[in-house]
Amino acid sequence: MADITITPRTRSRTRLERPRLHKVILLNDDFTPRDFVVKVLQGEFRMDEPQAHKVMQTAHQRGVCVVAVFARDIAETKATNATEAGRARGYPLLFTTEPEE
Ligand code: TYC
Image (tube, rainbow, N blue to C red):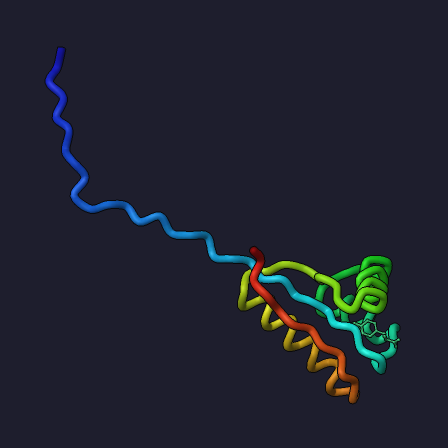
């Protein structure tokens, strides 16, 4: 049998945690028209009309709805753009982000 030389590892391998995903959350308000919310969801989150309507309706009834989940910078950019689309029209429409557990 051949001799086997085992070289001990001198540096320990650091396991990197996978970066946490972030939720984009839509908040209800009393002023933004429903159709406008649906259009923003379609435009910024690439949803079709029935999907966007469902998300809008959930936020309208429950106060909040998770729109989608992304890497942090993408979630923040989309939430900012979508909030800004409402602000540009004078609506208080608000999207926020939070890390997934
Ligand atoms: N509540 C709004 C209205 O009655 C519609 C709306 C739905 C606004 C969802 C924001 O996230 C929202 N016009």
